[in-house]
Image (cartoon, rainbow, N blue to C red; front, side, top):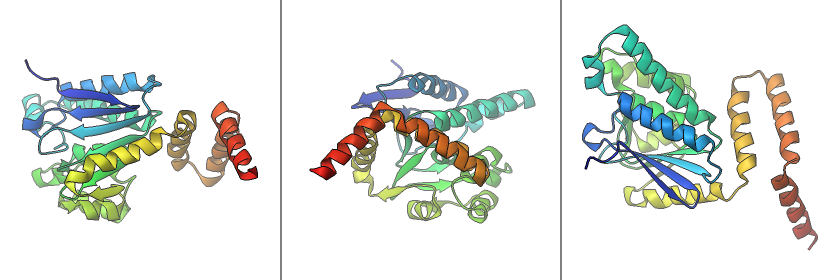
Length: 254
């Protein structure tokens, strides 16, 4: 039997979604984007899911869009639909109440690099490499630029977009595209440590905080502080905050 193009594994509140087109370097076909969107939509309402990890099967994390499929359906309406579909997946990742971690074990190019940038956090193996390489085939990576430019500095993002050159994992970390870099054989352990630390925190506080974080980035300072103050006031009213603060104060007294 043919394996699904997207695998899901649940353990201790951590949901791992694995892109499963290894022979196509996990290229984002319309079918894979549909499968990913369906799982993300379900996760949004799944209170048992505390952290989401996006991984890739085989040698690559994700090589971007499926160019063969794109060339086989080469009309503007189809292209517009595809990029709208991809943008919805990336936006859903940002809007999920759970933090999403990219597990990058191999190359992440074009829309694959966009996927890394769209995740809230990213952990990479030291052998991983990153590029927005569409320019090498006459295609500026415009949609990946949206996520990339919100993670790294403007000049660094533009250099990647204009040259299509690869950067290694340590350079990606230096530029802010990934959080942590570790040896390939330690990648799962590093992911587990990060995910477990987050999963142990208040689900309500993390969901409220993640929403606030992204919304305030697009606002002026006055509006950002107004929104942040309102979020903190609402957060203070939650059972998790009341219980946690009381426990902390009682511990200090003791």
